[in-house]
Amino acid sequence: MRIINYLFLACIIVFSFGSCAEDGDVGPAGADGTNGTNGTNGTDGEDGMDGAGFDELTKYGNIMIYLDGTRPDEVAFKDTSNFRFVPIEDISSENVVSISESTYSFRAMRFLSAPDDVFQYSVARLIMTVEDGETLSFPNFSLEIGKDVVTTDFKVFGIYDTYSSSSYTDLVIEDYSYTPSTGTMQFSFSFNVTGANNDTGNDLNVSGEVELVVLEYIN
Image 1 (spheres, rainbow, N blue to C red):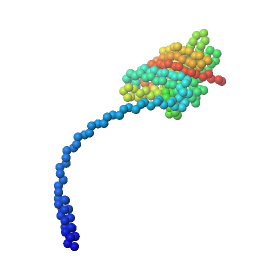
Image 2: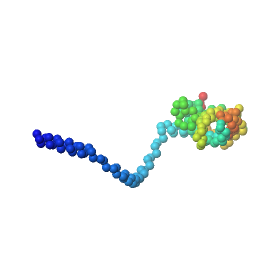
Image 3: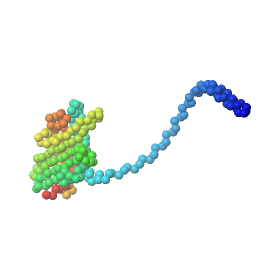
């Protein structure tokens, strides 16, 4: 019994002295380790394949549009767009030529990016009549442009206009050709639009290059 009491008393003494001891000062922080060596770059992966339908959407050619004018905030701008995606479900009405003797009526629409749904409306639509008789003439020419213009200083504005003989001046069409056996049609153009007739509110020069493969519409 005495042995047990002595052991209990010894434990109390050890515990008491241990609880009264003070912690030492914190030592200085160790030096940062050196950075490891960068690993070598891996080899580049192979380019992925074009998405399904890409070739079908772009094989009918493109409409390049160049805009040169002044923005709605009175700052000069230039913009280049390559409209190259055909609306495949409307190809019978939006990528065709109707031929009547020496008169050729062209209609072509191209999207700026791959068509998705009704919200895809960055578009160029060309309607053009060519009289290829004793002399070459263009009695009808209209161009619809729908797109947002993003500028280098991080501004954006929209141009959603249709330009026809009642709204543009100084129309020039050059290097026109059409080959029925291949459907290839091409030309370049330019015209001017006053501020009252375009969404910038300022004078605008519109020019472009057209290289299309159009289909002859069968009535």
